[in-house]
Amino acid sequence: MLNKKTVDDFNAAGKRVLVRCDFNVPLKEGKITDETRIVAALPTINKLINDGAKVILCSHLGKVKNGPNEGESLAPVAARLSEKLGKAVNFVADYNVTGEAATKAVEAMQPGDVVLLQNTRFRGKEETKPEAAGEQFAKELADLADCYVCDAFGSAHRAHASVSVVTKYIREKGGVNAVGYLMEKEIKFLGNAVNNPVRPFVAILGGAKVADKLAVIDNLLAKCDTLIIGGGMAYTFIKAKGGSVGKSLVDDTKIDYCKEMLAKAEKLGKQLLLPIDTVVADGFPDPIDDPNLQVEIVPSNAIPDDKEGLDIGEKTRALFADAVKNAKTVVWNGPMGVSENPVLANGTIAVAKALAETDATTIIGGGDSAAAVNNLGFGDKMTHISTGGGASLEFLEGKELPGVYAADDKE
Image (cartoon, rainbow, N blue to C red):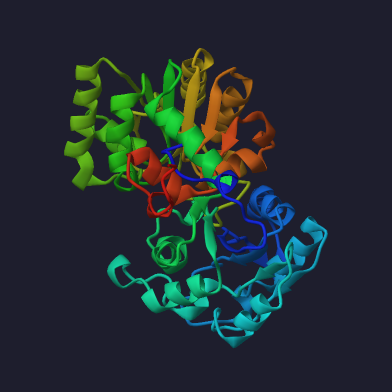
């Protein structure tokens, strides 16, 4: 657990507790289309309510590029939370987030009450660089509370005002900074998988770009027994081995890096598996979910010049599934192809199915692979599905996450 205080390590009774959640949920016409992140926050919120805390919730939602707007208000989250908690959640709609309306709402709270502040990014100070990360905003957030709990793993890799900077001001007033149950679970599963895995340990990486996963590949190669690489990033590796990849996605600036990783795997005695056959089409599907896309399967190192590789082939699916069969720990981040397309989702489905059928501890590293597993109906077969794509990637890289690091150490 990295020895951090949790919600079980302090008495919250009667205290104002600010909880940073990850309520960055998808919205369509004002309606929440996936409430996974809201459900994930409930154990911590319920624990604090039952302890008699005054629970003040905050979160961002969306990118908020052009200033505050009702389309990214947390109002729908407040309504859904009220239903889930079985009690009224007092939503402070003020775009200033920590202004007079918030102060008055908090002053009126009784033990067990819940207040939800407006989208933290409406302040415009949330996403600035760490050295200037909205100090004033962080101080105002801390002024509302006695203690702070970070339960937003999806934002834990950001040194933002409401994620890590606020802890400084809570500490100054003698308050406790802890992590919530969701953060504790994420750290436990991802931390154990990377630093103390039950072996054999298989890591599966997919997604489009090698550049996005440079440090992850390097770090996992040193720690796992088998590294499987699929998705668009595999074609740069295949080209690095001298294969012909046609019009497939390739990062020519990373060819040497891929050669280094292949050599490193050999030197360390690790198995590095790449696709042996590939589903190809004339080009990327447009629209992306075109169900009539014409495809064929070819050897992955002999893709015709006029074809583009878009998913792993049948032989590769069998190869990857076989590698997972006897594993004791599996971490998966990134789809095997353009999984949004029904014709190109078979590789991702095959990997999800292989993980669902193994006895291993299976950890899905957030983002597209988490969405794929849930959409394909395999979610309940996985040991742990991370709620944070970027955060889980940085964790797998071995980076220190500001939202974790900022919490108080256990005494």
